[in-house]
Image 1 (tube, one colour):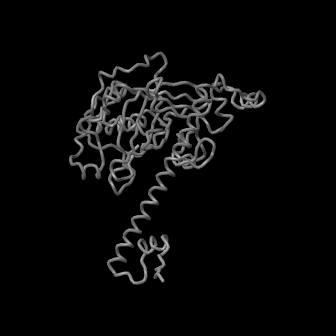
Image 2 (cartoon, rainbow, N blue to C red):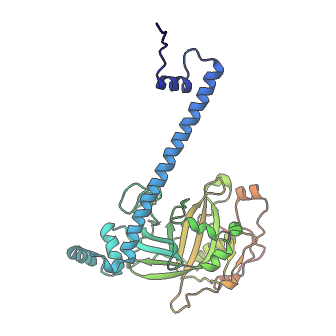
Image 3 (spheres, rainbow, N blue to C red):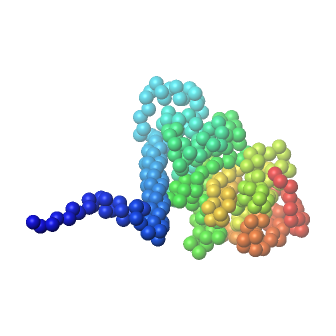
Length: 354
């Protein structure tokens, strides 16, 4: 009679190959443990990537729907009763915002930057009760890793009140949405045709609130440290309102010390400002890239003479930056005429915090 040998189950053989097993030599056990550890890392990474891009895709789809509500508001049907209620609650509202207000009453505006037919920023703006909620929630109130562009809660935007400096926050999403492309104004990326070329192409910001439509001329952009362990922290978020001309002048002067580029946009006490703040991920520290604009004044030409813009060869940075890249600040060199009725000494190398 033939002598048959029972073969091991294929799954058992795979298990013995992958997992430590009784009788394995030490070297074999180590090999299997290393393999299993690498496999776990790979699986977790894949799950995180799929989750991130799946979530981002959902957010992008929602943003397209939100955009159609705003840009196509004339063709959006709102329940007549609901519309009457909104008009009574917001008697001075621009009607294109009614479909968005029906969805979420935290909506306070819409920001656009870039080409008319292909803007690189084109987002609804909300204002909540803190600066935390909309970091990770979308317009529907659902959890979202990319959040929503939002205004600082401490200065409410209403029909009666336009903050002296509207501060907006948006994520720097690695897929390019929200405020990610604001970093292209930073002249460290000129090798990618950004920096000054990007500013000359896109020197303005359009921000429409529920009650008014405004264009802002960009006048500065700066790299900011947020932790004292990495050096000086410029608290640009404190410049939300100004009690007098001296406070305004000092705040703007400190921005001009730090900006990486100069423009021909002048500033004077009483101007309305806008500040766009986002994370910048290139330095290994908790840093921010911040863009500043000044609202076009009544009767002023809204265009910008970008031929007069130029790089600042010596922006004021912070200890971490100088420790890594070398150098030190050489003091103020910008033209005092950039701020109306302002003067400073060229030798000045440090100013008080705002």
